[in-house]
Image (cartoon, rainbow, N blue to C red; front, side, top):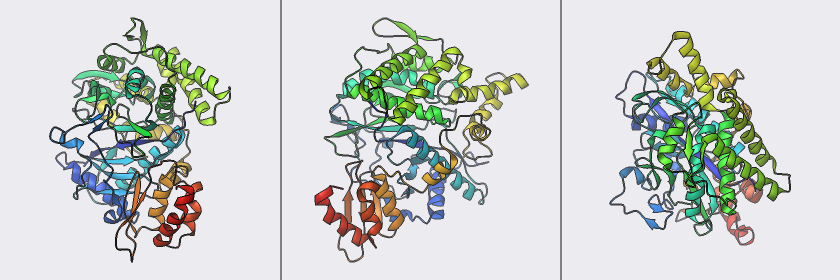
Length: 509
């Protein structure tokens, strides 16, 4: 068993126009995207999104929601000419999603790479903020998930899975894990309830906004398990599990664990290796209760009648994963799996002894330590607005303003990925997925690429009567190893398309 699979992180950023609370967030978000794209020489009209394979109303339970009953926010498959939408040379998508600028990372194959390209998105947003600062009043962006006034915006994870895995098994075995995963991966939040009506501090930013166990929506009646069935790959071979319950992380270890432990649990589900049922009673209410208790002492009830804390349930998953890894790897797991298992055990051990011992690895603990410092110094109650301001400042994308960035820069947050690697990921795509082909085409032939998506690149080549669409339904093809020579040796897009046509019969790339 391995953590390795095709995965990625999508993050919507909170947006504020200083001094103008009535500013239109859609317009401001468009400014973010177009400003960054223009600075990088990307013309939105020449590198927009291909919506041909979008299917946001397809449900993994085997039906399609009718467009007539869908909420407008669910209709993400129609091109809106008023919104900015570009594909970057690192294979990512930068666009306006509802009222937020969103960075969707390119496909990667390891949790560490997911962390790297997720942080690259922070640098993209930071650059946009810096450029907009020259045009008063500027725009501020926050890598968080709620404005504390009743609005939530998402950080979504994507995991490529085998279509052969029954969706009911995913629901059964993953739901309890997602209910308690926030203990390791929550970003911390000042305020209880969707509108922070109750004073206090909780583990996760998103938990209070979830209302149902399973469903298709992502903005209303948010479900613990999202059923959107849009694989962006060969549909009868793969499904893309779209996880919408996670927080945006600044701590590398928490982000690594979010992706890595979830991938391991999914691997056990795919292998039908989760034998005993760990289902919890009232999962939505339990999700809220776990988030509301930073002492981690709240007990939850399993369907079989057992009672345990969230930490104890996480240990159950950990121990089963450790046994399965040992069984399937012959005692020598690959380095990515070994790294995730190391941090999984380390963080659970520190949280078990004293949650504050995990302040270097877990966002909500690190933020709580900072907040407790302010509370002690100024005798602040949890309802004090100064603590909410600190909460917001925690996630500011600016290096000199964001508290999380300042902690990492001074060695008080564990950094797994060095800054040079993150900076390189701003412009370079992962080499081991189709993102490499997408990014290189945009880098080498920007005037010939008119649109792209996760599973296609569309060329408008001079002399051709029609647009040329290159399908990429296999996420592990289009890699540097697979098509690197073809791309590098092509003097122009026309030559590349001819070379791909000649080679397709042999390699399938």
